[in-house]
Length: 211
Image (tube, rainbow, N blue to C red; front, side):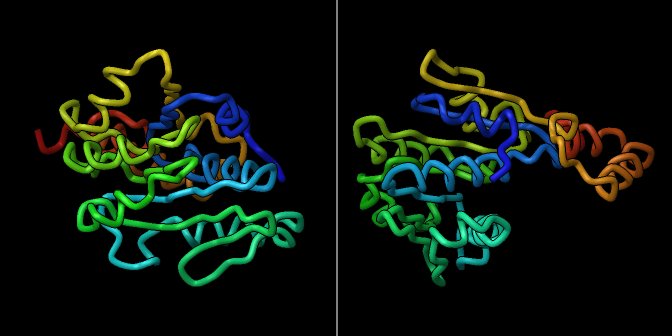
């Protein structure tokens, strides 16, 4: 299984691991690959969360499924079920929303890793419920997002006020060794059309259009 340099950095133990930036950087692919690889190495309970998940289609289930199907080792190791993914060693991926399921979130205290995708949408209240729930010794919270506003709870908590036990990295399209030409054409097109939109969508800058 091919892992980028960023994905390999995610193997270094830290309580919080934060990847942020614009489209095309492969943040979600890096995290998915790293978690699938770690789940092969040892039995893990991995929670994949986002602020709102109305159905499994809103989750990273499909992304993980696709990465599994692309690799023969992963394909022979993991079984993809409708609402979860399990490994032959007992590793388990489950999927949940944060906003409307506070009680369900509180039941996830045995998680080894909680990956919060599209975390720019996560409210301060959701973080207040989630963070103390992920309490297992050595457990980690992984965060991926494209910053919107400087006042967003995720930015303030995990980037602006990052501590020594937090790994933070900005990841852009320039860092993606597999960045496709199709996306590059779309990137350049938006750059010509709307620079503010381009800076937010592709360069991971704050969204200045609605301030």
